[in-house]
Length: 394
Ligand SMILES: [Zn+2]
Ligand SMILES: [Zn+2]
Image (cartoon, rainbow, N blue to C red; front, side):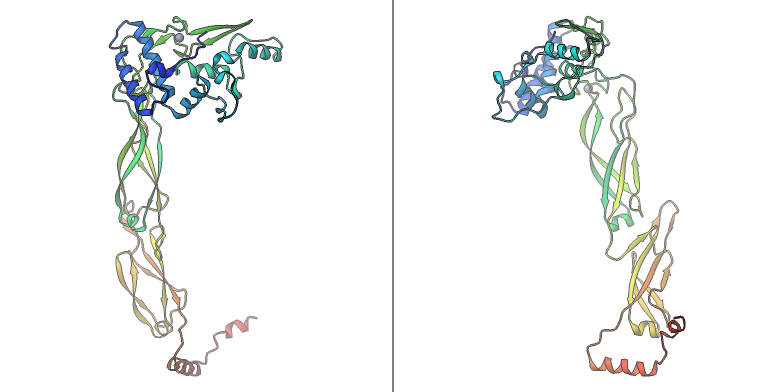
């Protein structure tokens, strides 16, 4: 059974307190030295290369490294490390401290002795299955080699009112998976495909625990019985995370909530598959008084008593600047006027919407005797009962 406590620090030749930079440097140096391409046919070098990969996989990840420092090994679904001050017998629980045979016995009793030889569900560490623990300890599953389209990416972009009206060009910093240049996305470093030494090419691993016999797919080769040389740059993933600047043209008149597609700017595909797309959802900020209603612009404009009473020509704001609006005599509060083609340009229709002006009657502010006098005079000549119609219908 390959249950052993690996010293990953020793494997990379770094101190236990080494920082991320030291670890990366040490890894690069050793990965180059033991790379299968440089040591053709050298099984020992291949083994060392894999050890270095495995060590780097754990030590380059903060969470995994912390687990490893605490327990002496790493697996997913492990309980979080106990805080300082809790007692751990022997100063750290390794594989030796974890009695799989005892677990197997308990499990067997629970299942009334009907232990299957294959795919036996086996609960270990807080719900993770036995196989999970092993798969995480003994190398990644090998990637599928069928070409698949990369994942689409979603991005939310806020633009201000004027950028949306006039259109704009923005530079976005997108974090995306790009095809690894070293291996061209195959995840393989080339060279001959080797027979997996873990399972001697059978793709199966048999392990004994007391009376228990486990047959499971070899995790090292993913059950294929073959090993490919893993690309040291992407560690077999075929892609690497990269921050990418993407230039995006925001079209004139873009409405709030619209979704723009930037083809090919999603994550890289696998095994030569095409990349996904980047989708940008536009969030348009509001303007203090211009309100958008589709391609139309709505605006409320205050008018005085004398303007509606006598009629007037007033200036109103539009997205092009000032425009003249004729207010006819007798205009009522809430009445709407349409300014043709003063709305938002719609690039699909190649046409502009309108601006809709709603008038809001403003009561006069009265703080001088002259105004008071004029209003009293007005009341005397204007004897029409504005509520007459209402009383008729009560
Ligand atoms: Zn194997
Ligand atoms: Zn690569």
